[in-house]
Length: 214
Image (cartoon, rainbow, N blue to C red; front, side, top):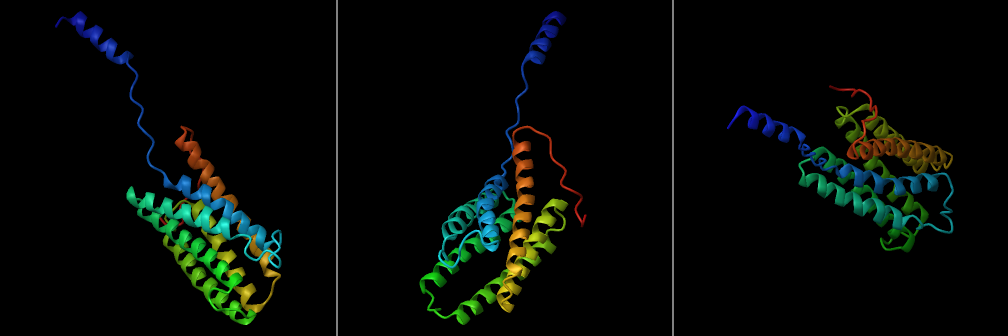
C-alpha cells in the first residue's frame, strides 16, 4: 500500500464518527421519580391537607403502588446490575411504603383485629420506632455517599422521629413539623433526580457535596 493510500485511509477513518457509548444503567431514576409522589402525599398528610378523619385510607394507592411497587422494581433492577447499595436503599424504602400501605389498609378496615384507638396507637408506635432505627442505621451506613444523599436521609430520620414522638405522646403539634421535614427531603431527592436525568441526557453533573466519610 502506498503512502498516499495510507493517508487517504487514515483521513477516511478520522472522518467517521466515533461510536457513542450507551448510558450506564441507572435504576435511581425510576426509584426517585416514583418515590416523590408518595413522599409529597405523606408530607401533605402530616400538614393536614388530606383529611384523615374522613379519608383515613386516602393515601393507600399512592404509597403502595407508586412508591412501594416501583421501588421494588428499581431495587430488583439495581441488584441485577450489581448496584448493591442502591438495591438495598430502594429495597428498604419499598419495604416501608408497602408495609405502610398494608398498615393503613388493615387499621382502617379492621383486618388485623385492631379496633380500638389504644391498640392502633400501640401498633403505630412499634412500626414507627422500628423503621426509625433502620433509617438511622441506613444514614450512618451510607456516609460515604455525596453529602446531598446524607442530607436527604437525615431529614427522613427527623421525620420518623417526629412522627414517632407525635404518636407516642399524643402531641399532634409535631406532625405538621414532620410534614415540613418530609417536603424538605422530597426537595433534596428531587434535586438528585434532576441531576440524574441531566447526566443521563448528556448534561453536566450538579454539585452533590463532599461525603462526610471518605
